[in-house]
Length: 413
Image 1 (cartoon, rainbow, N blue to C red):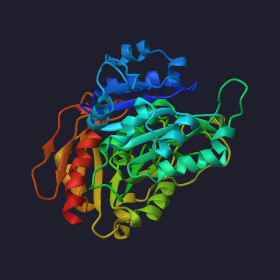
Image 2: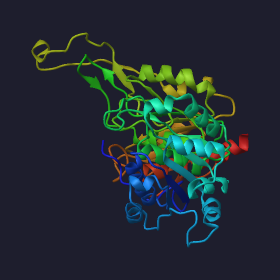
Image 3: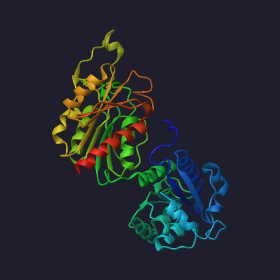
Image 4: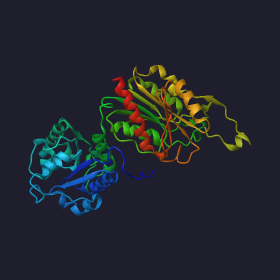
């Protein structure tokens, strides 16, 4: 599935990010990272080390950020440049972080502008190692990485496993892709007290109820809404489990993904996880019925004639039948996708399944429902009047939902 268009949004919008680039072959990816962060609405200051300038030019970063690139600790911009950078940054990311940089940062060195800025900041720091896999596995490098990991406010993002420079092996050492690093920076910017040390369970996507090895009963859900909620909850600092039916979406960064096919499989996964969840969000479009029998071989047209009748049996009501397993004091959010009588049907579902919040939308409205990146929803609770939100991206809807969940978590803490 193509990558969605980046637009300014939470938690990057209006925030100041210091991007440090050190001398590794992966430095070319950091140009895309700087561009993505800028398109998300962040103000990005880029610091290139002397070694980084052997791989990428300052002009490339200036072109995508619209801001001058900083390179020199002793520059005409002022002797206190490192203090300003450290003080003004809402988050710092170093990508790529070479073995040399990791060693210098672990020792608290102040021999270039980037390392000196790290000593002058209280902002969270995301370090993205990138080097040959043998170098990364070396005990001294591992010791330095661990020293940074233990430092308050520091996060080690990666490395990944995959192709390295030409002729090298493919073990751990590859820098994460820009879109993944963007999410780690988002978590550094977006973590909030209401979600720290909380567990969030999200269901997403359709279910497929098999007729035979080839055919199934299902629906058009893409999983976008549930995936957006899971990603946003992780950025806010939660530990997230996403139980997903079949979807072509990329798994959200940092999320524990449990893949299922049928409603029975989703029910089992939810029943296993819901007892530990502080928040449960039932965003999946679960098939209400399944075939009473599943053929072991493909059903041939000539074998059934002009009509093919299928008997259906009800699937488990996942939210309803796991109600007694919910953690005491947890917050539960349901979804209702309707074509008629939206509020009447939503209120019935809210009461029947004992949700704290219910997110209702009319699939017949333009820009809402399946196969689109936007949604138009009404949020109901047990006390107030229904709150209708304008058409917005599903990412923005996810943030609106989690804002309301956060207020309930804080009140119950």
